[in-house]
Length: 564
Image 1: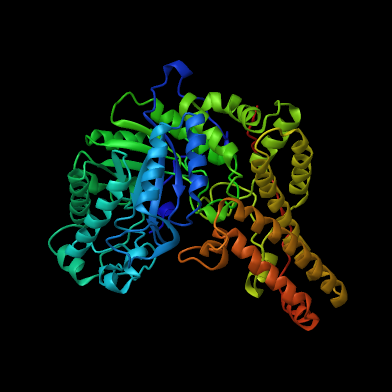
Image 2: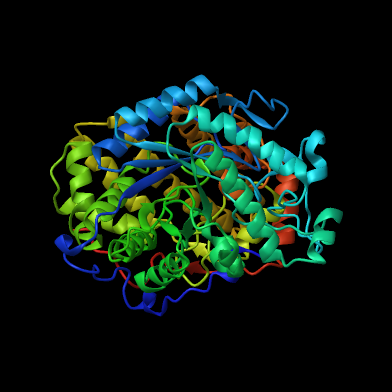
């Protein structure tokens, strides 16, 4: 079952307003004990210097926690000495590097919370022959997010080893065990266990055993809330009260249902952390205004809960290969203001404050208009939140099938994005600090203009009716691909490892949207090969004439976020 199928959203007010009033005046808010951000090192391991820079940014903007996902289906970002056979990223942190990073965070008043996926998202374990027997593919054959068998003794023994190493390296009082998006129940051992116990009882017992491991190590276990509070909420009744539930609901912009879930957890005597998202599966290289609304809703909902069991809010941010590394500081700065001061202050002042502090320019009407338009116009994938009426983000066609799909889908008008890129290039002359960050930010806007124009050009080739004219258009597309790829590749190499697999090969469990540089490289190869083969272009054009070319879609949702 996918997240959006069991997270029913109470968001009737989305169409009325992107942002809601704060729960109260700033001085009426409860102080959020944890105010944090996320590093998804398990999907893409980046350079330690970049991680230290994130810690510095958190310190400067009064964020005091950094969730550090170390293991997922794609591999481990931590070199486990007890189990070197696990799928491990080529630049995974050693225990010494992890300790240094944790100590750096401690000195900057930022606790680094390690996360080890311990139930679902465990292909880093089960794709290894030694542990293949732990894969617990559910009876319906669902292959996504297959969990490890919760009743097999080897599962707990392995987690004991992994938890011990991570607990030794990271000084935080918390250890996140993951346990989200888990599907299980098909192994012989699980089927036998389910004959005498419910899945909630078995799942609860497994999580309690993980909690006991954490207790032995002097840590407090955090688990994701989608499994225990939404998909199978009966589990809550079976959980140890010391377990902390981290509730993510990425497509909710109303504080009320978020507060209701938090109160549900607290009523069980447990503690809760809220988890909005910056980049989630709905977005490409940038997130739009509705993501800021999601952050606002969590910030206001949790600040209004006068209970020590409400620990705070940590903003998640997933799959670094989706976005440009240094292009998102503005959104992180917005999150920091919302978590510290509430949504009203964030909407009023966060982006103005960011431009002044980070780029060193005064806030004026040019910045206001450009930043407002960018958040308003940012397209999404219409994948995880179809109820959000967003402009559709095109995928650079890198195969015949993708091209046919593109031609059959309403086109995104490139002109607003071309105009935005031009505006930000003019603003660049006023930037006084963090020039490399602004270049990365600008490139993310230029990418939106590029991909919208690229897919529109395929339509021109489709309707031109002249093979020679179509060849010229395809050559132009390939030239644009080459230019964009060079820029993306150069940007990647600044803070990421040039030889990272995330740049050069398809990662398990990802889509084409999830690997920006890798997919643009494939798109360039596709267009360049076509440009050298007029006969193939003619064949494609002939085949595509049976597909109606869809008109351009609207470039923006109806309602506009005011970034004043």
